[in-house]
Image (cartoon, rainbow, N blue to C red; front, side, top):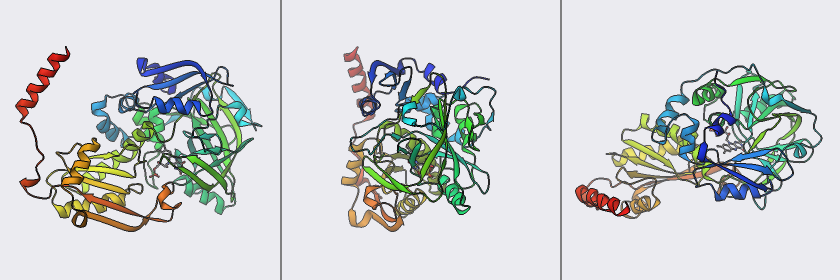
Length: 448
Ligand SMILES: Cc1cc2nc3c(=O)[nH]c(=O)nc-3n(C[C@H](O)[C@H](O)[C@H](O)COP(=O)(O)O)c2cc1C
């Protein structure tokens, strides 16, 4: 069986992997490099990490659609359809024959920061944070597996704070706490990017198992093994595993942390006590810098592609959807074809209620390029009448990390119908196709 893991992905990148030989510090410097290279279309491998001889850090793994396509074994043109097709298939995990992630074992470590290059990202972050830990746990009631990305703040020694704001892990912790018990968890770091993506796919309370989705996204079953100190199965080919339990009934300050919203967020969050750290001998540590193109890619696949599928099934005329980059998927643009105004209104209500994160939605006709802010602003300026074409929904669930929602509770949402409605008067000006083709030929010749 082909070995699929972070290393096999990196091996296949060739010139799409930028290798940096200069030593960089996990404190701010790694994040600064990732931010400056986020639009390069390349992943970055830091070959020298200050204070951690022999350890490498890798980041920007999904910073472009091209890299995401590679992770799913396709090309950019087929990325969305491949993702949608694979995410509903499922390949079940298998028992691992070899377990590289347990080559080195530290039980009850005195100081996790001495073992791993925990990174500090932004200026006012309260401490180093793990931003790309794939957190795994089992529901103490049903035994179901759950996994998701959850930020973790290093609190010294072997304690971390963990932001548990989303199901299923919030529910698993509530179930454990009702029994007065800790929740066993394992945090996988340095998995292949398809598995990482699977961990944030929306699945709903009854599954399917995200390990099955991981299997089909990467085209090979995930090899699992038992963690050493907790009752959780972990990917045997990860680079690092942190094992531990979430302490029942404990909540402590966690943050401030520069979030994927581009703003700092502080919370009163549960606390993890680490029971073991295991890793490969020469492990590669993963980095994910908040509020970068990598976040946009993750959200556009794990959130946007799914929402588009749902809306296409519910409203005739839905053509395409773009989550606006840099907005943590709070803002989106949808293109429609031949959709009458009452249908656009229904679409706006459906989209804003189906997606918990989505807050600002603009609907345009399909002659508008939804990935070009100039075109979307043009539609808003010429086809949109504020009194006639705005939908505001109050009393909605607010997203906890949205700084304008005041830390959770209720929020409001807004939709703009920037379609032309009916009538030729709203046609966009255009140059005849033959002249456009001629211009292209002339310019291509000039560039030769
Ligand atoms: C980059 C990224 C970071 C995330 N960080 C957190 C986090 O710190 N805490 C949390 O509860 N959920 C976080 N999530 C969401 C969960 O992983 C969530 O379970 C997953 O996205 C499933 O979708 P849902 O939000 O609809 O439940 C994050 C998602 C992404 C894409």
